[in-house]
Image (cartoon, rainbow, N blue to C red):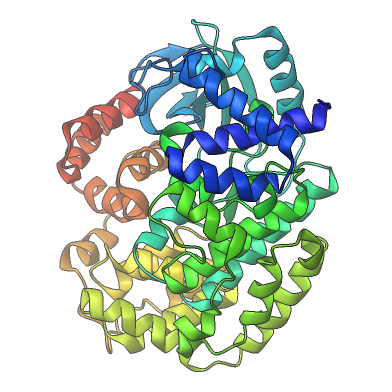
Length: 507
């Protein structure tokens, strides 16, 4: 069997492992398409695995579904001071940490030991990591460093971003059209840069898109799927990953940049409608839907969106890669065209404001005005940021301060803050008296110390940290007193311990 057919057989084998016996037969019959040699090879791998001789038979019990964190807050891993565990998945455990050499916040992804167990795998992984580290684009999370754990497994060091991933945002329901288009444009821009260098992500999904607090979208885990040689992630038969796989991935065929564009189409569809274009309760049901079904037009699910986005999504979700966009640059042109047409929709700001107002008893007119002002600075992602911040702010002044803290441009911050004058309260719910009082007081603590505390608190509480630190600092006389007072806002003891562990160096 040729190398390409062997790779295809392995990919189909991994896909079949997630299915029960009956579903495997239907799946293999469709993806093998009459290729008896390929079918027999996959069947042989499945038989070996059933006897405990196959790849996953050897790994059974080695890769836990929910890995225990091998690192603890306060522990040092080389130059990295571990702050807290922030996530895990089939690709390893992720920690927030402090780089003690450069005094910067980082994220460490500790990969499972089996992914770097063999010399050939380690060599290939290092080569791919080197390639991924050379991606320099504002919408791509780059690799800072690669190191080795005490047990010999590898870890990656990446920037730590304040914000949340798109998967968390989608859980809250459909997003406004302009917001989704703005996110897609940033993702497309990052993909264009990577594809130009011949690097395909292979695992574009909402959990791998980080929305930072300053309005940027960061594609994370670039190249990791390729580094490990994993195309079909089996951990628990992950529905989340299968849902974004292109037909050629499911069939075990060669993937290229158009595979990433398919995944972006699935993400946009889900973000707009609140449902995935290819449904199924189990992995094999989703696989079969991807291979045989055509996605229902978004306009039929959400008539209020009109049919503006239908042609673009239809092209992204074409089963034949040759019918998709030939490259990300062409997609960006169409995205810009749709964004231009959406700019004339007068109801978008009001609709976003009304939805947020209903949730938190805000005045829609106030929120709509803030969305319009913020959009001029950061573009279509503004409605999403306003909705996020409005969930935790209690006045227009506090909301504007919170949003301004996320902007890097001084002029943009000034424009947003000018609307927060204390003599202009029309339509707001009233100024928080504690915030108003603290705004006129100062703290004796060094500005650098206060900024460091804000950064540490934001890792626990999010963007509201800026306001809380300023408010609390006005009544504290020492760094330690301020830090301990801020723990009052934390519900869980683990969060309090992690925060204090981070800031203790400041007093």
